[in-house]
Structures are given as C-alpha cells and as structure tokens.
Length: 396
Image 1 (cartoon, rainbow, N blue to C red):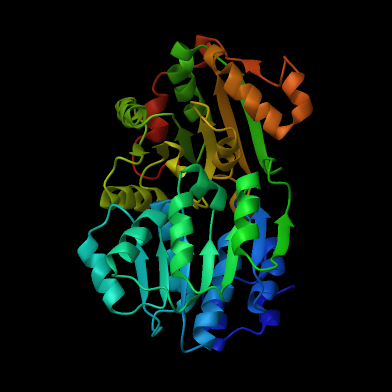
Image 2: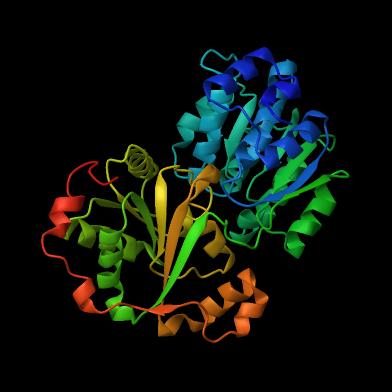
C-alpha cells in the first residue's frame, strides 16, 4: 500500500492522518492495517521505531468511528509508553471527537480515573496492574470490549504481568479481535497467542534480534572508575540530544546532578519519580530544554523522541534483549543515529550475552569489536563545557 488513502478509512480519520503528516505507510503498517480492518487477529513482531503504534491505532480508531457500540482496550507495560499511545489516539480521533477515552495507569489518583470510567469511555489505554484494580472493585466493565491490543507483550511478561493478563482476559468477551505485538517471540509469548488468539495472521518486519542498520555503533573497553570522564569526553564530541542508560535509579539522579555541575544540561528519568515529574521531564526533553537524559531501562522501550541522536550505554542492561530496545531510542523513522557502549571487566557475562543475541558466531570471538578508551589528554578541553553545553538549546 503506497498511501493511507488506499485503506478506505473514515473521512475524519483520513483528515487526522493528513494533519499528522502521515502519507506513506511503513512496512508494518502496510501489512497489519488491512488484516486488522478485515477483523483478523494479529501476532506481530517488528523492530522498534518502525511505526508499530500506528499499525494498531489506525484500525482501532477506524473500528470505533465506524461502529456506534463497543469499546477497545490497549494494554501496555509502562506509563510512558501508555501516554505516548494515548497521545497518538487523541490525534487520530481529532479534537472534536465524541468518543470518550480513559487513561488507567498506576501512580495516578484513583478519583480521576473513576471519573473517566463513569463517563463510559469507548477507548481505554492502561497498564495491567491498575486495569485489574478497577476490574476487581467493579469500577470497570469489559463485557462490550471487542477490540484488544497487547503492546510490548514480551516486556509485560518480563515484568511479571502474566497473572494480570490472564485475569483481564476472563473479563472480556470470548468473541473479540486481538492484536498482539512483541519485539521478541519467546515460548511464553507463543503459548499466550495460542491460548487467546483466534487463527492470527503472523506479521514480521525485519529481524528482531538486530540493531537497525542506520545506527553507527561503537564499543569501548574501559575500567569502571574511568567511565565518567569518558562519558564527558563523548558528550563533548557529540552534537544533539543524548540518552544515557544507567543501571539504578540512584545512579541516574547522581549522574544528572554531576553533569549539571560539570556544565551539561541534564535530567534523570526513572521509576521512583512521581508521574507528574516524569511527564515534566519528558515534556522538557521533547522541547529540547535540556540535552542529556539519564535514564534507567524504564525508557528502553516505547520512548519516542525523534530528535534523540545518540545512545550511550554507560551501564549494560541486565537483560540482553533490552540492549536492542535501548538502541532503538535513536534513528527513529529512518533517521540516522549513533551509539556507544562502555564495557568494563565486570561486564564480561553481560556483553557475551548481548553478542550471542546479536550474532551467535561473534559470541566466541574474544576480540569483539571493542577499542580501548582513549588517554586523558584527549578528554579534557578547557572552557569547552560552558561554551558548548550551557544554556537552553545551543547544542540540542
């Protein structure tokens, strides 16, 4: 399909797509949308940054606009991803849409969500834990929910949401359309699809265990106590927005504070922040009010900020698959990006697992593609901090 007009969509939805400057469907959209519009269940996998959200959001909105009855539910592993999905849904519905929505996630006041649910929303986006809370207290009904989307299903199972998902299915009608998207296909995903999907159409776009080819990668073998100086050196050399991944919430806060002290505009994002604080951080990052975002793996999936040009893996992820998702925060929608990973002596097992995931043959290559960290005389550049990175948007 060369353009969205060929899908025969509702006029209001077509206008929204035009306003959003959606012209040519991505491969995952071109394959998934016709099947979804035709009422088929879908089991889809695709690399991050390929337009997966619109692949299920467009047919979902089309169903709601075309049918006066029935509702839709989208389940997502994190609040950040849920908010991005809801934002896209609102754009597709348009500013004057009569279809009410509810955003049901943990970390927000119950009262606000109860008011949304009492308004009888036809579209609900939420996380499994809080959705279950409302189902158990009787404040949410899913008896007429005939359209279900599970986004980042592998991540939901990794986070321990399998029990909650099973419970949610019991509240839903057996006759429904289910779209399940996952970056990887481990056995538990396949078993879940066999149990709850009805003869699904299988869609796979690209290899899910590879990093996008438009990302330039670099690996630095380095001692643990020299990482911070190397990070500053990398930030001096790179222009544009950067996301730095660290292992713990404490380190995220500490590093953001240290970078601000050393002249870089920086903020932290992690699970201990209140939702309104997380929203404010992301809003400011999207507006390029600061340049460097320090994040835990809460931001490894679903975070869609088109202007991120660089990913720095200061700490390697605990789970090898998250390496691919971290990389997917840059080079979105066909743009180019770059990434660098710091590998210390303590990271041997983690790096081996990542190599084995990306290229099984490379797992036995002791040399890998790493290069040694450069010496200190290339790191420190007097006056460079203030000149290049202080201020609001100078180097963003």
